[in-house]
View 1 (cartoon, rainbow, N blue to C red):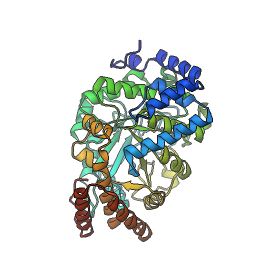
View 2 (cartoon, rainbow, N blue to C red):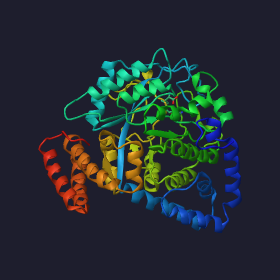
View 3 (cartoon, rainbow, N blue to C red):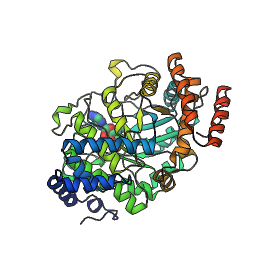
View 4 (cartoon, helix red, strand yellow):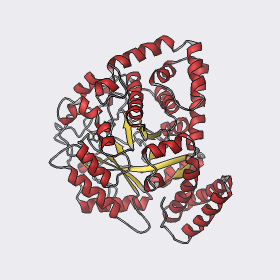
Length: 472
Ligand code: SAM
């Protein structure tokens, strides 16, 4: 029985409700009256239900599809302006006891080099990431209670926050580790993590169990209910995602939105962000072995429909995708991207020889961060290294309130400008700096509130003079 408020996976992600949704969407996808009514609601920019959004996703009337894209762009602009937040993944360990068939870290893979960073190696990696200009990391780890127990993850978080190298600091550590207990989520919360990230991989229970044949991750309910436990433990920033390619994308899309609706219904706060990874080639993994791969056009439509259905949610795209693909998706709703990423355990501090390559998947966008920043600015975006919301306690419900009322610009735009200034001062190449300084001058002039404009100008001067003690 479908019940978005329930804490039971089979009730908030009801298989029957998804099937009914898909049927409803197929039936109505080209019914102009229904589609127009949904678009009318969508224009209020307060979101759509999973059923409504599923109709838009299936709709293939060319003019309506154009309207969907235009609306996604408009909502993106309204809620996020031209800001794009940057982050990098940091792989701590690829020891893993699970049997995920799409991931090269699966237990049966005996030839991939297994590696776990020591605290000293983490410090070196973090210095290298700080030298690139990063302020926000997502730590990644395989699931292995012996090699990567929660204590190891907690020590690593502390090490990361403690590294202060030149003008650098990591101000927000997001955590992508396997589903765990309320007790462990409490420990992560106390360690001051930013967002807890966990991809569902697939919402389809039967497929989920086949794709995760062995190990603790096999348990669909335990995995699917992880965000409930995280929230119970006090983590109010969580990030959802599915691995597109594993199951039918329509099914995943409905499941993803139902999961977001569930968090909102049960805890009063939806997900902070949604990631949209697609399966990639990796060590012993061939993405063509999976039948549900999606083309770039479908992928773009999914991103646009998520943006319309959940206007306030951050949307993340990683370097799994190429520069061209990322360029297209930025325009349709993506608000956060990784840059200069390595998906191996180690590799930022010194390059990995092939024999030690422990990459989780192949990266398509291999450009260094400086190039990514320059590219974003040339496209008209304002790269942001801001982590201020989290540092100022604007998380969970409080963040959502500010975000939904579209007031977030008053915080984010000035902070984006100032953190970009820090980046330009400390890390940018001359060419990137020249472009960035021009952009900052333009952005400052666009600030409407005179008082805020004045403060930003003063802070920009302080940053130029070397002050770095801001709560961005
Ligand atoms: N062990 C944790 C867990 O089970 O959730 C951390 C996840 S892993 C380090 C990060 C994510 O990478 C996974 O959730 C999965 O969606 C994704 N991933 C795994 N194999 C992949 C592949 N071949 N291509 C693209 N993404 C992949």
